[in-house]
Figure 1 (cartoon, one colour):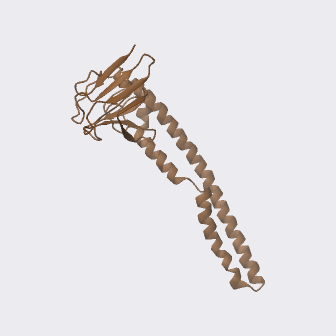
Figure 2 (cartoon, rainbow, N blue to C red):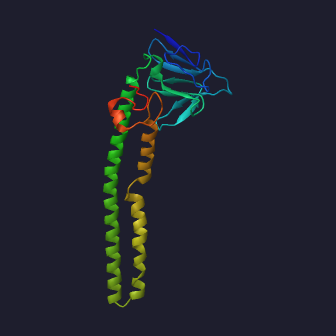
Length: 217
């Protein structure tokens, strides 16, 4: 059966919206007979807008778009004047955040496993880069020694510049992916927030499906 939910300060969604950055009738959520979910911005071109969160945790403006039950939407500009919620909230009993917390736990577990795998791989890459640097130093010292014995000491000193170059090259090609680790940690930080109050929550809260601050669960 087709469902339509007007979302806003005067909408018929099953949860209250009081933020001043949200219009009286801000968006229209439609669930068709085939359980396809759609969202449409009802504000004007110069209004506060409708936003959807991408897989990196960033919000982008939309006008009308097919979504999923797990899509996270934001009505209005960022900050305390906006309202952020998962699309499922439009059909969930008021005060019941169990669906959102279960979804959050699955996502955070997946991201933390990804971080664990990345850290393990970075340790291996760091060891490999160090071995390559040590081998390059050993080869360069050997060339200098041979050159000194053969009487070509000045020319033999030139290979000593190679360990530095090889060190930079080995760290670039085989060293740990530090930027990737920072980006992943930033992504975890963006997602690990309470689905009700929007505050950052601990891993303990994630695993226990509740927010210590607002008591949502």
